[in-house]
Length: 263
Image 1: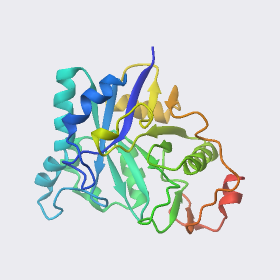
Image 2: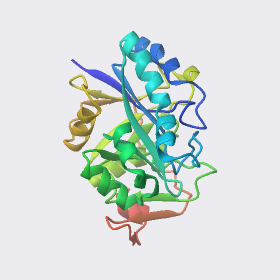
Image 3: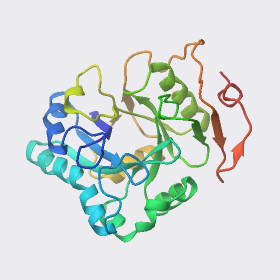
Image 4: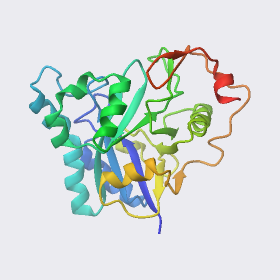
């Protein structure tokens, strides 16, 4: 058996850029044969929809509403729904999996983590960190950040990316010898179509988000739902943004992209 999962999805309850509520996504993903979805709304450093001035417990409870809304509808219709989040630093984004609402309530320091603290603390508590769409080039992104020691996996395919940027992300994952993942980065239910949604394929059904963490850490992802040729890198596609490559201590490494990826 093969089980398909959406790993990158935003709701209007948790993400300012989200258009659809959590429950609105469920039937569309069922119709396309997904076994489950992971809600990854924007966390404190990103485009979060929740007022950061709220007391921490109220902030966490409101932040989780999109996930809980989706989970309730998923339980009713037969789609598994899991919790994660997406954190942003200097235009670079990371998907965090394996921690839950109760953990967040006990750890307000999570809103102030550095990249290094994030990977250390998430791992300490049994989770994992995936570098989301690392080579994306949009107007709001000023620099490409490559964090060699701060990720457990790389989101090699993101349906919001241009294809060459995903090809670079695939090469990045191979360079680090970590799992490559795929997700749709969906914000609006109307964008869920057979040709626009990506996903991760596992060989067993997830009972908890911990199963996804284990698959990433053990490099046990069975496959990715992505278009054919997604990871073929055109030789004429260049990264035009400044490049920032950092080691496990978040110290800058002076190296070109071509030398780093050997492309």
